[in-house]
Every structure is written in C-alpha cells, then in structure tokens.
Image (cartoon, rainbow, N blue to C red):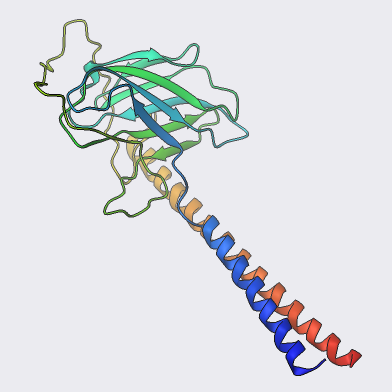
Length: 249
C-alpha cells in the first residue's frame, strides 16, 4: 500500500471518529422539554383562562399517577379549578399550588389535564414547576428555569404572556368561603423539590437529590465511555487496515 492510500485510510478513520463523537455528544446534551403548558388566552390579566398541561411519559415499566404543579406568583391555589383530567383523577390544593392524580395511567401514556384560572397575573412569563410521580414511586422533576438563553436538562413548563388587553385590571384575589383549604406541603425549590407523596421531608429531599446526582453522573460516565470505545475501535480498525495493506504489498 503506497503512502497516499495510507493517508486516505487515516483520513477516513478520523472522519468516522469525529462523526461518532458528534452523535454521542448530542445525545449527552440537555433533554427536550417533557412537560409543557399552553393557554386558551395568553394575555396578561386575562380572565377565566384554561391552562392545559402535558407531561410526557418517560417510563416503559410504570405509569404516571400524580402531578404536582407549583403555581407562579400571582396565581393563588384558590384561583384554580380542575377542568379536565384522566378518569378518576382529582385536584387537591396545596400551600404553593396543587396536585392532580388518581389511578396510575398505563405505562407510556402521557398525562394531560387542564385547569381554569380566574385571572392570569400581569407578567411577561409564568413558570409552572412540575413534579411527576410514577406508580413505582419514581419521581421526575421538571423544575429548572433557564436564564440568559442557557439550556437546562429538566426545564419547567413556561408560558409566555402577551400584553394585557386595553382596560384590563386585576380582580380581587381573596379566597372565597367555598374555596378548598390548601393542604400544608413544603414548597418546591429550584434545586430540589420534595415529592408530593407522604415522606419525612428531610429524608425524602436528601435521597431525591442524591439519586438525581447519581443518575446524572452515571449517564455522563456511560456516554464518555461509549465515546472512548468508539474512538478506540475506529482507530484500531484503521491500524489493522494499514498493516493488512502493507502485508499484501
């Protein structure tokens, strides 16, 4: 095999390796949004707005049985009423939002529900941090809020609002006598929200954070190892081909 042929083989190996790295790096990037929210009227101060939520199922072994929604500032739990949800699911007010759940959905089935909000606040965007609980106890947290265009792995649903209609004004937000009393529940923080299932607060929070960190590290390690294996295999194939060419020559 002449020098030009060897150079051609090495170039092909380099291109193949680079392509493999790009593909694996893309797989290691931030996940696409798996929890979303839309509105029937996305103007600030709009009244009697229907908010529709979709949580995509990520598990093939278990189904979603409960969603916990943390309401943004300006929307109190007593301003929200359940409109549509899977059969048997009910809404329960919490200190910072609400939970909606019931019989677990079939594995792989997205959880969709909608609520009616008395009035949207006067804001540019609304963040609805969402915690999904599966029938086997696994919890997915879509609570991260991106800033300055950065991407995050578990983005919270965000509703962008348009300017308020001319003459729109805030309505009274005091709870009515018939409003359900929110059940005491710790707030979901941006770093480590507690699941809505009953558990000792401190223990549940620590375990959830440790699990999330372990999963993240494990996934990263697997991806890095895969990249290394691909590079080694491609390089080895190139060396073998060169030696084979030389022996045949």
